[in-house]
Image (cartoon, rainbow, N blue to C red; front, side, top):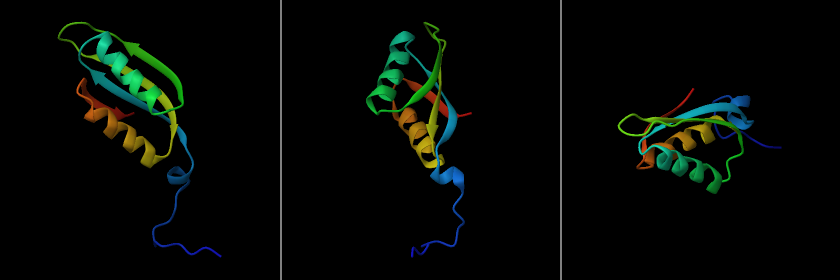
Length: 93
């Protein structure tokens, strides 16, 4: 028999991965985009789809992907993206 250590109800979202859309805005054109894609691959994220809008120069490029994650894993991915030097901002859509 297993006892819960918390009074908070466990939601399915916290336990089972769902497809979540995460977007990062990066500087550096294609180089910034490649840094994000390399991090996703290196960390073993199972990316379902990926879209990129590359803008060279001062304008930021956008990298959007759909990944199967729990709520905690999605928060961790967004935090990892925000720590990258090329990333200006990142959020879960």
